[in-house]
Image 1 (spheres, rainbow, N blue to C red):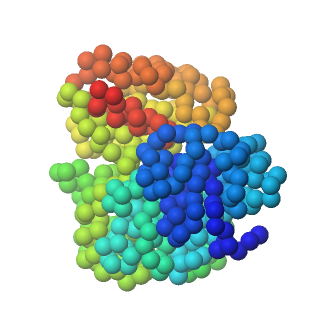
Image 2: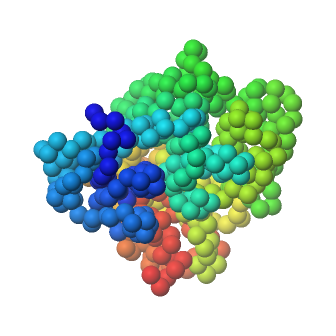
Image 3: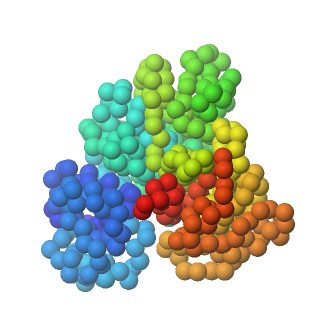
Length: 451
């Protein structure tokens, strides 16, 4: 394989993906010629074009001609014509996570944030505090973070703060100086097959950490004793005296070794963000960022888009979208609504992939117990083919078999859901749109009815 720095023209297949686009912009800023393909016509693609990156809207093989590296995302299959062309013409082909690992080696300190839930928010929170501390980090996030105007902040070469995804063991391409594991629950079992295999991968990720990993004490039993771990949410660093303030956001006292280090006020909704904040405080203190800067950072941090995002109002109803697509995330999102608002919660859920629904069906059927009504939207299949045991129709039947009294309005197509919601005369309710697919478009469309 060539040295990375010998490449000059780099082609990204699926360049409109959240991580792929960030890496493309990063390489463009370093002077490489970058182009790519994506069948989506989204805001990310528009942003790439505004940055003089050519994006083709098809996967025609000839687009790759003249490139010396082709990067592909996990969503791209081996029979993609651009991958076939590259291999036939001896153009090097590389998976996205491998490129991320190579790029990370160019920085003095790599901080990688992983976990089943919360890694995007935690990465953004940490990156933002490093920014206001004047440390000029380069930040790579799996979401749209308004405070860095997107999913990448190109800073200096001292710090690289990156989200580290466990799917297909992507995070094992990294050798971070410092790592974070926010939590571990059964997820991506289409790849891992068993929860035990998933836990083994997280242990390997921590094993690759050069200095220290910060992990919630609640998951201590999942990790080997010989790993370089410091646990938070326990004796070492803990949150006490949690208060839900009038604005619906938490504040808490943080103690280190039983000594009060300060009171912290969050600017993001949900009790779970207290524990994301503890992970962030742990890393910041490790790098000697002052308590005052951390306090200011947490209090002025504005969350990543699609993470419990209040989209707007429609008549007397509040519209919220949350990226929650895992059973425990759904429960937390509904609970957060109930904590903040004294209103009925009308859930609109779009399952993400048939395999996730199938493997976690026994957890999904209880996820909506606290919702007042539930609308199910046809599944976002992503990379997968239809499977009945992972379908939204099967999910509906299983929920009703366990809870016949549950008010499920039915399974609907994306195009009809908003019309049905508006025709039912809801007043003073929460429309909670949940999912990691394109359900955010529905939430925005119901607020902006002219679309």
